[in-house]
Amino acid sequence: MYGTIALKLIIGLIALLIVIRILGKKELAQITPFDFIYALVLGGFLEEAIFDEKVSIGHLTFSIALWAILIYGIEVLVMKFDKLRPLLKGEPITIIEDGKLDLKALKKAKLEMEQLRTMLRQQGIFSIKEVSYAILEPSGHLSIMPEPFAAPVTAEMLDLNPQKSTPSIMLIDEGREIESGLRLLGKDQNWLMDLLKKHGESKISDIFYAEWSSQYGFLFKKFN
Image (cartoon, rainbow, N blue to C red; front, side, top):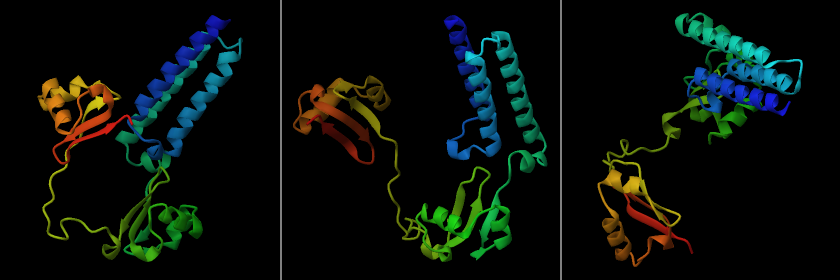
């Protein structure tokens, strides 16, 4: 019995991984209600099958395989036929357009005014006057384009030429040298030790975290 449960769990895990791959690389906020149903129904399959002795491994495998085929088929149809996308995946709804609140769109989205205000506040906007466009995405996320006077000041507006940012590279992690980071920089341990000595340190094991970036140079934090 325990072997059967274990095997069902393994099959279920593989099935969940397959479903995630079919859905693509999406964040939770990007998953549509239809995508959520995929996973919810699959979870129901597994919940019933794992502890129900009447459901054999063959039954479970067939159900999951059929469900996966249906999911894949729907995803392919949506990609090939644009008219199916609004029906199955939903479509964006423009709530605010050119600074004007669309009450019909608000009603279509089944949003109350206070719900909209809450969503705006969560993005740091406390007045509709600050919004040029607001679009409710199929996932339920509200995308906002602020009015020019409310938008953050950029370097372009100030006619500045800021230094280009590059990702930092970790060199030490909890007292251990990160060889892959040194290789990315084309450096070795001697270079790292020289950097530490310039900052009054002599042991890698004393350093909790260290990184290097072309923008900020060498940054580190000791254990204490």
